[in-house]
Length: 254
Image 1 (cartoon, helix red, strand yellow):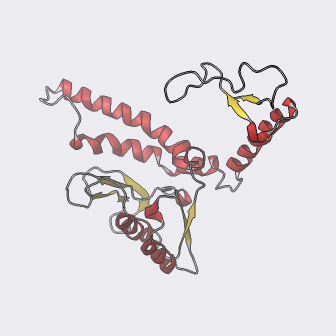
Image 2 (cartoon, rainbow, N blue to C red):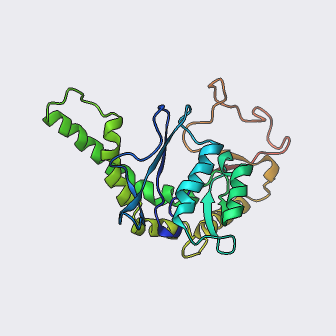
Image 3 (tube, helix red, strand yellow):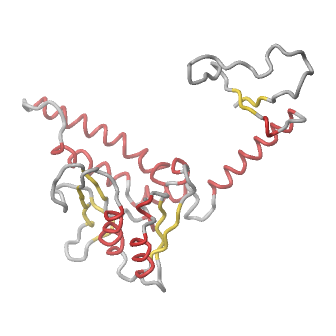
């Protein structure tokens, strides 16, 4: 789910497999949205279930507690848009009914495109991961230097390693970069145009081959020959036949 709407970082939602109480955890990362009563960013929220994954009930709870609370002036006449992937928890009847009632428009990305159409994948996580790895290394070094009995990281180390990295990676500056990179703000649709350019280039290469029957077009891969399920090299169809017999199979190297 996109956590960078309007360049804000939403309250992070962390789902754990342990049977722990829901709620706030000390030292957890905070949103860029400031709470009026505390003057601090809204804290991350934690949920636990047996699977440690997203469910229909958790998605509804997240929309109610984490998203709707950030937009007090949201109404059906003054809606917000939330960009999601096509996970079933984003499409339950209960969630869609709630969104319609409060003024949330759900937009779905094309399937299997999060690596290019999701701002977090394109920008935010690329900044978060090295910071997180560095924080973990420093945490381990601290344990070594203090003679800790446990020379490994556990759940108690998660928030000290995560908070600063997350807040840096999901700052307003980085969120703005992410939206621009996927062509949402400014609305350039750059992902679409780049895919369109690649498609047209591929079609141009096919035309150069000449007389290609697209129904029998196969792809050749540079390097080792493709192998079948048994691990054996695939034989060329028509091998051993004389030239000119039957219809040839065009191969496009990629």
